[in-house]
Amino acid sequence: MESTEKKFMVDPQGRQVPVELIKDIDLLRDQTVSQIMKKAFEMRNSLQKFKAQIAQDINTFCQMSAEQHNVKFGGKKGNLTLSSFDGKYKISINVADNKVFNEKLQVAKSLIDNCIRRWSQGSRPEIRILVEDAFQVDKQGNVNTGRILGLRRLKIEDEEWKQAMECITESLSVTDSKSYLRFYERKDDGSYQNIPLDIATL
Image (cartoon, rainbow, N blue to C red; front, side, top):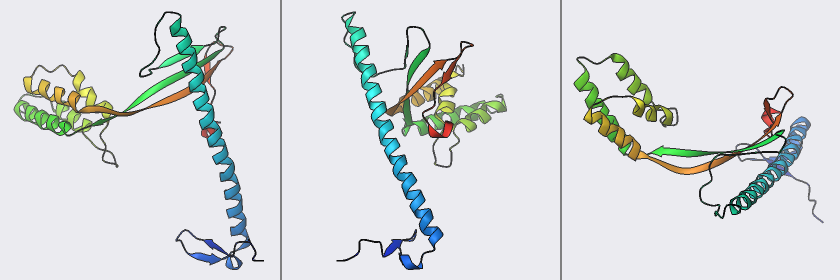
């Protein structure tokens, strides 16, 4: 009967290395990491099931609450906070939208550049710096959504600038949303302390 014991192990380059040529400490390291990762995956799966169950429980409660007013609960969920009767515990659900810009953002940038060129004689240099900073990209080539949208708060009465701001608005779309579930416990001083379920914060 052929032995089920490993004769080879695959290294990071994909090469098969005979087990007899691998140092004992390397074998022990591999065993330790594999055992820990198995537990980590089990914990991840448990947390995923926990999150799904909590979301279902909250959704059921919200439906029951809505029925008290003959209102149908549904549609896109927003931010929500639920507290226990004594205020000791608090559950918070925050929904964050992932926003991206389409090609109209480049149209807006061109219009803004036109404005700056027209204003070059009398405009403050801070405006150009502000715009250039807003359109800077990170290492992944992505722009900062907050900085781009912040340009719309500038009170500039120029038709071309207003057109650029309209292009920015039209260029923005939401690709998906992610919900964050947080739990809080009230301390003796009345402030709320987050109950961390992220292993990095424990």
